[in-house]
Each structure stands twice: as C-alpha cells, then as structure tokens.
Image (tube, rainbow, N blue to C red):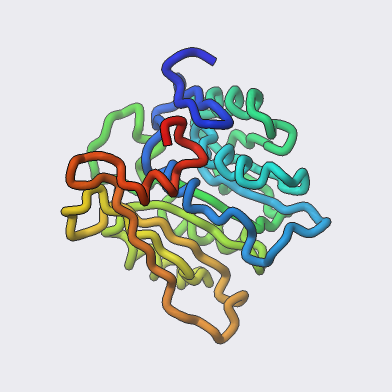
Length: 252
C-alpha cells in the first residue's frame, strides 16, 4: 500500500478516499472490544459480526485480528459512503482474513434482516445536524442519515439473543443514548469512560457494551465502569493506554 497509510501490527489502513480518517475513538473501541463472546467458546455454527458504518474498515479488521484463530467468524461491514467503500474494499482485500469479510455498500437500513449477529460494533455519527463541520466529513458525522433512534432500532432488531454490541461516542450523550437504547430493549452492561488527560475532571468519550434486555433476565445490575486516561502529565501516552492498544499500535 502507499505511504501515509495507517499501519497496524497485522494490517494496514488505506484512507485516501474516506472523509473520516483513522482516529483515537475507533482505536480505543476496537481495542476494548471483547476478545471472546460472552457465551464462551465459538460453537460449530457460524458466528456473525456486524460493523455498522465501517468507514475504512478499521473496526472490522481489529475484530478480525482478535478472532483470527477461527474460520467460523464471518464479518459483514456496511458502509454507504462511496469514498470510504473504495478504501475499505482495498483494506479488506489485502488483509489476512479477506475470505471471512463481506463489504456491503449501502445504508444499514437496506441490509436484509435474515441474519442475527452475535457481535455488533459501531463508531456512529454523533454530531447533531445543527453543528458546522467540514463538508467532506458531513455524511460520516451528521446524524441526518443515522440518528440514535434509528441506530438503536437497527441494533435491537439484528442482535442475537446472546449477542453484544459495542459503541463509542461523546460522554455528554451517555444518559440520552442509554435511555434511547433502553426503549429498544438494549441494556448497558459495561462502560469505558475516556479522559484525554489525567488532569481532566470530565470524560470526553465513552465506550459502551450492550445486550438485549431479554438475555439479562431479572438480574439487571449496574454496568461495570472503567476509566481510561490517554495522556499523562507529560503529554505522553499512559501505560494503561499503551496496554489497551498494544496489539495494534506498531510502537507500543
């Protein structure tokens, strides 16, 4: 691949055509995502993973690396932006797990409902339509095409009973997102509160892990909450951040 791409330990990301480049949010989410499904070892039946709004394909490839020991894991990466699809198609074709990845070039609403997914991952558009951002990033970041209500419904309808979904978004939206997800039968079971600096009093981003409420039964407990600090007082990566992302970053 051409120079200037984002290079990880086991794959490389071309991002020449995508409006949204590789960012810290996705790297943290993909690193934090569970290595194994909550139900235990992967069974003989196919294990389905869905990446909603895959962009360059980074999250799909991060999960493919986690699950590379099993050919039973099949990935569906959905993306509607034409430029991002060009990058994702190249990135998938040149990775070690190309045979297990399908790129679907369409909005998530157009994906057939005939498959249930044990894992769903998403770095969703989280800027409201009233905010001003660069025009080339609008499709990837405005909620006009995929707001929280639509996304919650899509996840709820597509998630397998024992499956989990993992997302990253601004911490300020946490209460609203959890409320919308609860209305769609989705219960938050884990949170990662992300602080850019050790001196910050309030988290900037949050990763959440959700399950269908029906799979939690009557044992609905408060979510497990972790804290992640990216930079220390010397503006260097913390050891906690290095440990989390070490499987992917070349220099960690």
